[in-house]
Length: 354
Ligand code: C2E
Ligand code: MG
Ligand code: MG
Image 1 (tube, protein in one colour):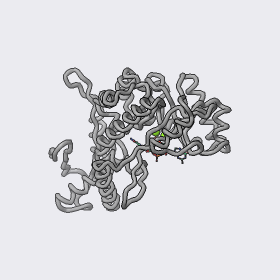
Image 2 (cartoon, helix red, strand yellow):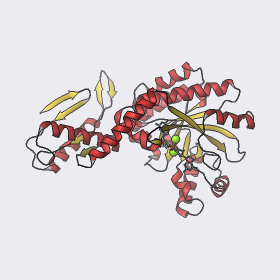
Image 3 (cartoon, helix red, strand yellow):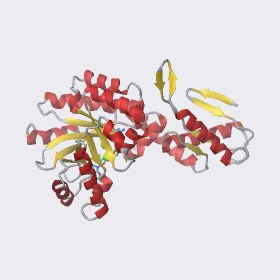
Image 4 (tube, helix red, strand yellow):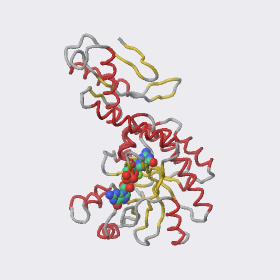
């Protein structure tokens, strides 16, 4: 029995399956089938799904319980990634409750204007001049204290709150870009784009509108997407990135080296920058493997004519390594943590126009 539960949620009741494995096989087949492109009015349309499963009689013996548990498993699956299934387990309950509490507080914080955008300088390895900044979300909750974006962004992705949240980030960053331009200290600002935000068909228009609203030129805006987002649906990613490139934005691949890049796609995508992930910088200069990977990424960027930013630089030894191997830009606590815009303005004022 297939039923539409509401919105984009469907329920399937399967009464004749022998065991859990058979249900998982069905779920996998369904996910694969939904991942192909559909042609509607001559347009290719991409879709996808996540699946949550619960079982009678081991998880519950009434419909309400089974549906509630399937829903919890679904939420869990969405948190893992796209096109994934998950089976209910009792420990999900607590995680889901915690996430829902976090979601509710985050939603309030967004509505009440209590989130902040901080800016971490990106610095030229040789001159030490600030050449740009990455906008990073900061949330200081009165009860929970400082909550890391690494914790709340995945929750916002799973609940859909990421869309209004991202809109706020884009808008706030563009407003700040305009302020710095008016003050005579224009600065490139990089904004992190979540997987879901990037997949919205009208995402390039959203960016264009934000730029127009604040009258800033696209050349000052870097769009950061992670390597995995760029690579997981390459055709779709390419269309989005081409549209952003046409606007005049630069595209940076974040956390580079941690995902699986197809070098053929990398060459075909309109990418301008690679950000070497902090996990490789951590072992530099001591760890021979990290150093070798960082050198390989630097060489790759050079041969593809891409700019480079090293992330998470904390020590002079790491900076010396970057100088030696000609990585031009870095970001890290060695220079500064992310700071409020006015603090960075003071710093830029002292440095003079770049
Ligand atoms: P990311 O984009 O890779 O950002 C870099 C992270 O490394 C930031 O963590 C930054 O504070 C941290 N970092 C920079 N330099 C150093 C260093 O020298 N040492 C150490 N230990 N850490 C350093 P943060 O701000 O906690 O953000 C974590 C992640 O959350 C970001 O990783 C990004 O993926 C996501 N995020 C942050 N703000 C936003 C946002 O506005 N939108 C979206 N979609 N994601 C965001
Ligand atoms: Mg980033
Ligand atoms: Mg990163």
